[in-house]
Length: 250
Image (cartoon, rainbow, N blue to C red):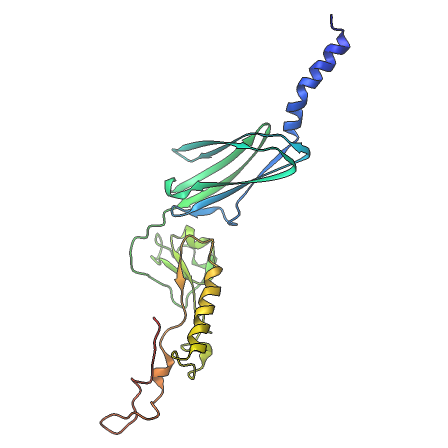
């Protein structure tokens, strides 16, 4: 027959797994550094577990709940030592636009976060731009459901997704019509167009996590058309410039 002391020891030992599980902390993180997403992307979700000792293996329950919809996923996570990160993905193509709460639960640990999902489909195939206007948060209310602009020229602001706008870099070549504002920079010169390609690639990389990124803007009118050709003249004997431009990249 078990003594009272033995019974207490056995009972306390049976509670150890639950106590260890409750000591584990669980946090939700979004590697894309935003909580606003579109229906044309994979939504990255990182689950970070920390504890004082070894982390037990077990099932993680991830629940995405909206006003009229709910999705539940179960993932088997491996054991770890003090800290472990598991990277998961939600398919935005299969999520209806709306506001959601994402809840992660494992054992006695839980964490939640609010996210928004917007459609990537625009009302028009034309690009309507507030050229020379405000950028970022200052464009709140100017998107497709406001003033009707569907393209933001500027940085990688998250508000562009909320405003249902596409986004692109602007004036990569120095903010003027020719490369660095120099009309001697002929587009037929490899040092010119290779430099433009490089700047376009560098700027494009800053948008690599944005689902509404559509390209980069170099600059506008070719300034070389302003100059007279050094040799060609028109029928009136005056210099003409329409043959001055050897290459235009649109």
